[in-house]
Image (cartoon, rainbow, N blue to C red; front, side, top):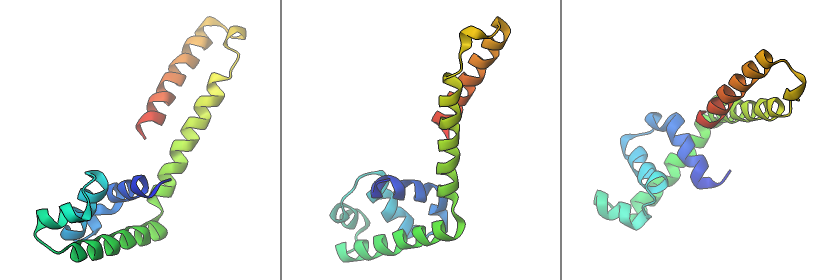
Length: 118
């Protein structure tokens, strides 16, 4: 998982545990693609201040993940849903009765929705 995507997900899970300033800086940088210089100008602080807050905030997010593991559990659940979907699609539907095929197709649709929205 790349750093930007991972940090964005960590912000979703743990962002409210950061200071307001750290959250604001990380949100602008990782979710809104602002550079450190742009953030410094917008928040009226030094670029070094932005850099320090970004580093501390990201380290704090990683520490929360190491202790609580919510992102890891989320990723595992998403992968399991995708694995079940793959297995369901491999079923030989032509060898089942019409009622069973309809049920399995509904299950596949539900699993697809679940896997795509986790």
